Length: 41
Image (cartoon, rainbow, N blue to C red; front, side, top):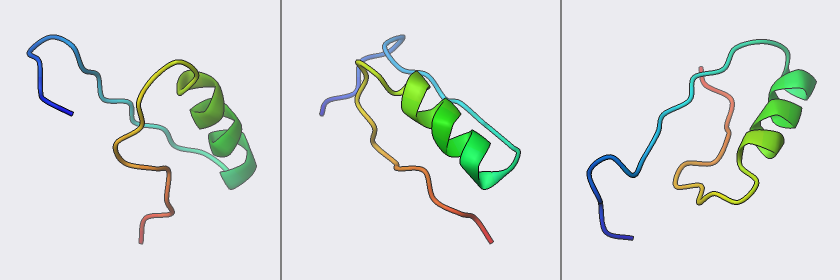
């Protein structure tokens, strides 16, 4: 996927795992995920 200036967004979420997965799924509808939601250490 080529980069196009102004055609991208970054989202930072925090909270419990179930809630985050729900928010991530809703925000990703219709978009392209380049980095899936993963637990960070």
